[in-house]
Image 1 (cartoon, one colour):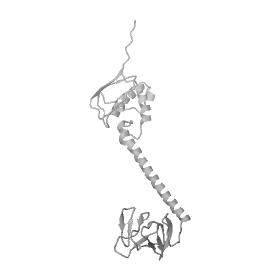
Image 2: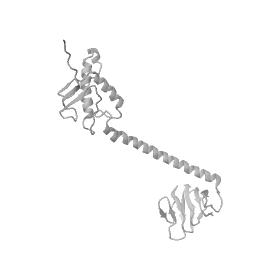
Image 3: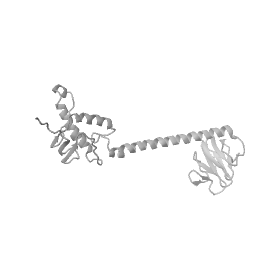
Image 4: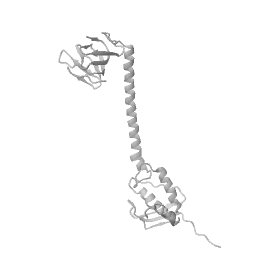
Length: 253
């Protein structure tokens, strides 16, 4: 009775010297799902592509006709002492898997690995999300500010001599006008440029946004919230038209 040879159960690799592989001997089980793990640069891709794929593709191409082989790019022969029992069809499986999993890798590490995900892919995604979130937050803040200004312009007083402490009012100043602020009055410059004036040496206004104070003759910063804590503070336009949001007692002169 004829006997049949026992089919191989593993790919036997001896003396692999591709890239970071230093005379590696390893057996890879056949007919099983096999994962290759290791730190970045440990030789995972060198083993999978530089040895197993290269040898498998070489054997696959050798089975084709001379005419076909001339029209196909052949992988370089693996730098290895011996590779036994590697199925030629394995090259096709590795080629399809590599194409499906490759993502912004390079020729030295084209497969998606844990190190690639942790060091490259994930930080890139997080960075893009943070950038988009910051842009969206800026857009929302600007839209809200514009809506408040438009609402105050429609419903608030634009030329009265006294302001209400209940909400902000949008006022317009032109060259030659001055705005006197009562104690506790809050003001926010929206359009144009303006300078604060005092009749003493004390701090002119509290810059609530910056967490400090500004002195006599200082130009206001747009969209900073200022508060008058001492009487006798006035604002004077230094451009043609100035628009401010104001809450608290004030007088236009």
